[in-house]
Amino acid sequence: MQDNLYTYLLMLGDNSMILGHRLSELCGHGPSLETDIALTNMSLDLFGQVRSYFQYAAKVKGDDATEDSIAFLRTERKHLSSLLVEQPNTDFAHVITRQYFFDQYHLLLLEQLCESNDDQINAIAKKSIKEVKYHHRFSKTWMRRLAQGTDVSHQKMQVAVTSLYPYTEELSKANGVEKAMLAEGIGADLDAIKVQYYNELDGLLSDIGLQKPEEGYFYKGGKEGIHTEHFGFILSDFQYMQRTYPDMTW
Amino acid sequence: MVGHLSHIAPEIYQALYKVSDPEVPVLSVLDLGIVRDVKQSEKQLEVDITPTYSGCPAMDMIAVEIKYALESIGFQAKVNLVLSPAWTTDFLTEEGKDKLLKYGIAPPLETSLDKQVLFEDARLVPCPQCQSSNTKLVSQFGSTACKSLFKCEDCLEPFDYFKCHK
Ligand SMILES: [Zn+2]
Figure 1 (cartoon, rainbow over the protein chains, first blue to last red):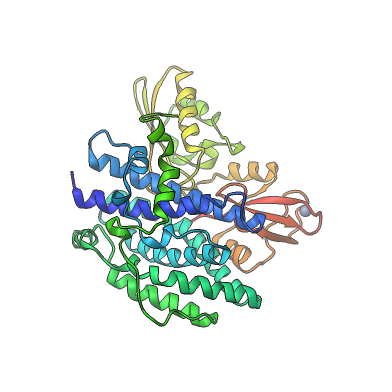
Figure 2 (cartoon, each protein chain N blue to C red):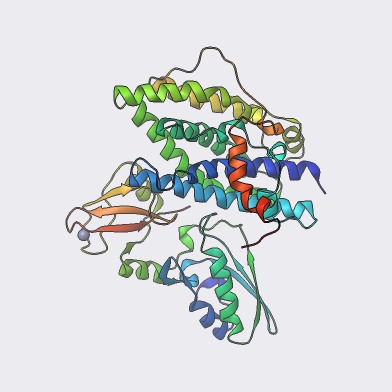
């Protein structure tokens, strides 16, 4: 098995899966019908992307793994999503800020993966980027609308930015697997993405009158399987049925 | 007959034509352009289909229905899901666009017009009920991944718009 490729696919898929799950939790709970539909549509897109990544990962793994076993049967330390996407749906300001912080990265990532010399990753990226452009437009528009809305919406956005910004750096901080994938022409160049990413992010924040935190401290660990306290709850949602009735199928 | 499928036998084409999209039942999978290739080896068929959107929940059902439709005319069929080239609304046939309109769903506009409609609130999508262009975007995301929700300000009917996807 190609270990690095397999791990890289998990990293790509896990971000979409955990964020997709967070958005799915909002189904029926959005602040308005339109935003509810939008968030759940985005969740569906992300889960579609996860299926593509995990079907491919199962093939690369080569044993009896399936997309479902990869999605549902790994322990917390084997999940490689970044810490940002597991942060909870505290309020709509947090939902939108988390989404924009991820979408901006996701868009830059997929632009590069559209050039990947791995045919399947290339095809998934070309398919996904069309969807992610919509997500990005949606979240960016809402960032502006809320930041420049009422005093209360502005204040809530500032709280969300202050609490979520420290989770952003991990996205574009390459680990060993990502460096190896870049060297093989399969993965993205995260150093290049990092520069573009913070240009976009900091540019938007200053344009809409929000401050990034001054400390410059960043959390990391998700990509190595070390998660925040929120992750266990997500996993219990995912795995309850399999732990209760091992090997059950629908 | 759709160009890239002109090599397949008429009976196979007819069988596929009868399989519809469960979310827009008026559209055949051929109108929608998701059948990308059919390879025949005597009574064995391999059908390549591509999803409209990654998360399209109809794909599994469509794959099963294609298999049954082909079995009903005596073929064994295997359905493959292919991602490349990625589906675009250019794959929709003209017949498909007509059917959408008659069904009450506004078919996709050209890319530049679509952007003006979805991001600049331009009023360009004709209402499928009364043909007025005095229509307004209600929600960029609609009842399924491929649609946005609109409202006609003349006849006041809400309607779906099939988003341009390229
Ligand atoms: Zn009308």
